[in-house]
Amino acid sequence: MNRILFEPNEIDASGVARVRDARAAHIREVLHGTVGQPLKTGEVNGLLGTGEIVSIAADGAVAIQVRHTDAGLAPWVDLILAPPRPRVMKRLLPQLATLGVGRIVLVGAQKVEKDFWGATLLKEPIYRPLLIDGLMQGAVASRVPEILVRRGFKKFVREELDGLFGTAARRIVAHPYGEGDACAKTPSGRGAEGRLVVAVGPEGGWTDEEVALLEAKGFERQSLGPRILRTDTATVALLARLMPDR
Amino acid sequence: MNRILFEPNEIDASGVARVRDARAAHIREVLHGTVGQPLKTGEVNGLLGTGEIVSIAADGAVAIQVRHTDAGLAPWVDLILAPPRPRVMKRLLPQLATLGVGRIVLVGAQKVEKDFWGATLLKEPIYRPLLIDGLMQGAVASRVPEILVRRGFKKFVREELDGLFGTAARRIVAHPYGEGDACAKTPSGRGAEGRLVVAVGPEGGWTDEEVALLEAKGFERQSLGPRILRTDTATVALLARLMPDR
Image 1 (spheres, one colour):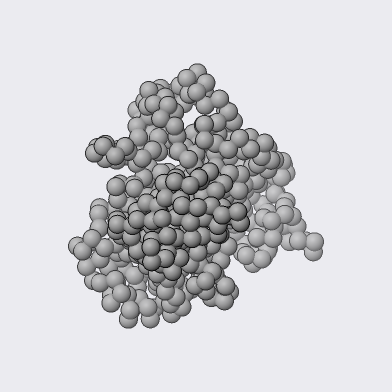
Image 2: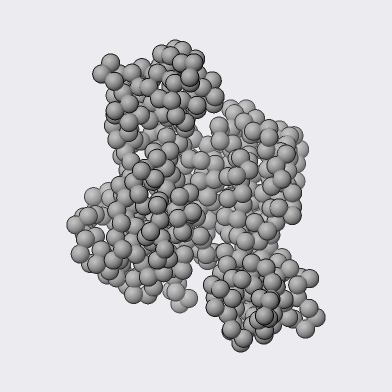
């Protein structure tokens, strides 16, 4: 937690936020918080700024006077992801929020395990705290990534993708080159409108048909080298290779 | 498991490998192995090649006739890592093997939690299988990363680093730029001998003294952008930004 974020309803009319959960424990035990101590704070889906501890109660509850004036950083990339197993996905979600992903579309590519779609992780009360943890780690943004579930991959790509992301966005799909493909492409910046959409396939890879469908929609292939990466490693690696330096 | 690796002592004089552990279960249950089926195989710290299933016993043991002739890919980078908590480190180790790290030096930077050095994860019988899992995921290399433990960070940097990595290697340290530093450096290839050494700090960051010591030894700072990444995310992200495309 490099910045403590509060939900809007946790901040009262006089600008005092009150918490008693893991954030309070972090303030007390990791930051060794004392009354008057300044903290980096912010409001979920709102402004960032600073807070000052006004009280630490005997039961561990912490009250912080906050002053939020800074918009923070906007997301810089959207992700189309054929989800890995829920256990891997659970580890990946906070990292996606930290890295600045705006929207995550979970798609039913052919090699996605059918069990995934019944996972409790798909319920907002389960995944939202993981995303907020990632924002608190990253410390410079407050916007919670939006998660969309689209089990019909082809229907999503054909009918919804252009409307959702706009046709000017640069589009990249993580996919190894074929044996005979000698053309090594490297990332060269973002699309005409500065938006970037990346697609990462399932553990077993995209099918040829799926890649063809994405290529027909303007997705460029981006190889991550000859090593076969786990989905979570591949997603972080691809985002890292594309992300702005500052 | 995109390639099954065997220890040298698991392969008999006639080139038949016999396994009955998680690899056997993977062959039976994920690959739906049958007698005669070809597999991608290799020998730990040895050659890669192909195998053919010769028998699947009633107790689940699998025998594979192997033919290994290909050297596979050599590691391309070494890592100096101020280790995160053992739980995070355990997730990171297989990814480091997959990504092609040759040598991992775990150093006692000031903000590394002291508890770490007592972790069972530091015992070779515990960490070695995690590294081999990473190699089996990556599928193109067999060399198990070497792990060195150096609790004395300054002593290691001053007295041992040059001898271990050679002075011609390109050296990079992951570290945010100061507020006033407008110079965005980007990776520009590897050192004169094609070797690359990267240093990743602890959760709380390197101290100023530690960074100065690394810079005095020729390490260039590489920012990973304004977002504060978890150590495991930062390590994968830095390696991904530097790794060769093919």
